[in-house]
Length: 436
Image 1 (cartoon, rainbow, N blue to C red):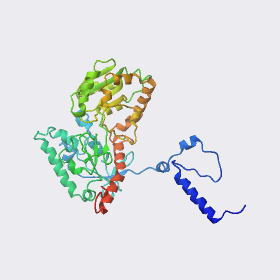
Image 2: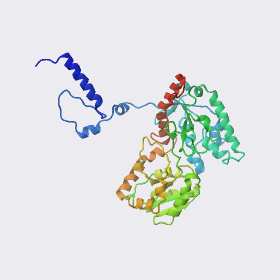
Image 3: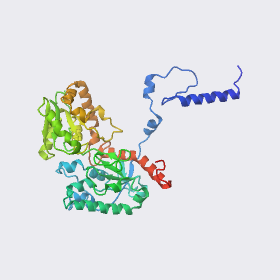
């Protein structure tokens, strides 16, 4: 048979390219000879190229420079007379504990630096570097949530002036930093977990990576999922470490449990409405309480003996109750139309939680009817998945692979490509955001 002409080869190559770029699938398989179609099991086992490369070697930890701020900005608020870096006091009140993310992020960067300027890397998503020029991100260790709780929580309280002055002094420090100036603070990580934290000057850090509980009291100009990290509350009940009953479904006789304050503001007003619908119903424990020592003890017992734990909005869309339920392996029933959840790019909450809109939850008997229709096998499956993810919500020192503080630092890393894009474009654009 005659050899194909050069023109025929060129035309054939062009047609092949057209076919290649027209294929609407992730993978393309080319063979040198006709072969049987690839089996479905083979196709399912193949991973995208990027995912296969990611497993080839361990990624080094995020390099973080931490500002050396005076103690009054952070641990001095815990104990002004203490020296060194204090442990978090076990007796600290529930409100202070649940918003202590700032403390755990700071303590994760503590430790002696070696000859390479890094703290020990094992088990960490982020390590501290002493040279700011070697840093990928900058951590600002201002305990803004604790400052709100310590220095007068009422705006009319004269003590609240101390909180404002700390924010003023901090901004003066940051503005003088060439590292803040070169990025306008975009690569700076600032904890702001309490909804009233940094309330006086928060607009001045609107470009930074904020560590928040939710977006309930933030404007769209200040906070967004694009740049900020939603972090879990630090749970106040003890983790259920020995949850291994022969029949977990029967070991939890209560169908639905809620214990907390029912008089709340904003979205939290739904709690009082739910109380009228649910109190006194068969299988339901709906109780008013505060986050005090005895109340926390009762909540621990209640969550561990319940199949489902109700999580309505607090003053903002989220509350600590959700994370107490997770570490108690009580399937969360989340009632909120505007909630954002931690680590949701890695964790599918629908596998171990139930979601109801406010309108659905307020229909008489609708919520309880839905819970009663869930088969035992489905509940056990959700309970098992809860146990498997609960370690992601543990705050501890030193940090452990996959725990809450490591997950938060991993989320910070995820934000940096967009941060760097904004920094680089800002350095050369003559007309910022010209397409707008």
